[in-house]
View (cartoon, rainbow, N blue to C red):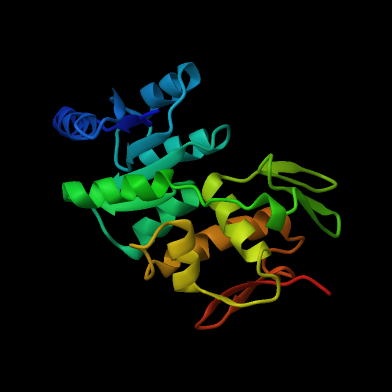
Amino acid sequence: MSARILIVDDDPQIRRVLKTMLAAQAYEVFDARDGQEALEKIEQSRFDLLILDMNMPVLNGLDTCRSIRANSDVAIIMLTVRNTETDKVQALDAGADDYIAKPFSTPELLARIRAALRRVPQSPENQPETLKLGDVEINFLQRRVTTANKQVRLTPKELDLLQLLAKHPNVPLSHARLLQAVWGPDYGDEVEYLRVFINQLRKKIEKDPSNPRYLLTEPWVGYRFQIEQ
């Protein structure tokens, strides 16, 4: 089945161009004029991907993204006219899976869409359904982390990243390997993506995210999932 994409932008010309472009790629395309309309449409219908403008009146893209992430794991690409690391981190920290600056080319946007929709194939025989880390239980099938005091969901990209690390316990995995495995072969230099996603995962599975026990940084290399033997 074709992916269902919702375009959220206050500029009608951008919505028209994107709808035409994506419909030509056989995607099912819908649009919303602002964040509030997008939230209403998400409540009414299922979407596989949102293309969400960061700078909108009334309810901006960051606040819209945070509201969506409270209840949904739909893939989200954030659009913005600025291309600074601060903007990227803000978008990813709000819950976006990816980020693209305007103006962008058609091949670039289509590649970002494929990356956001991409799911890492799982090998059930090599991956347990659940993993216990002290009083933390990770259910990979349900994409859920449970502790004594709370229960939180993992987004698809968070799950893919955590599963990849968990499949190679106590082994440092490079930034490039993690990015290319989770986002795709066109990625490799977007280290800020990993920094944000690892920080989000630490908040969900670490007792003290600022002093992690399991998700460790390997300086100048990447990250390691530490499990006591």
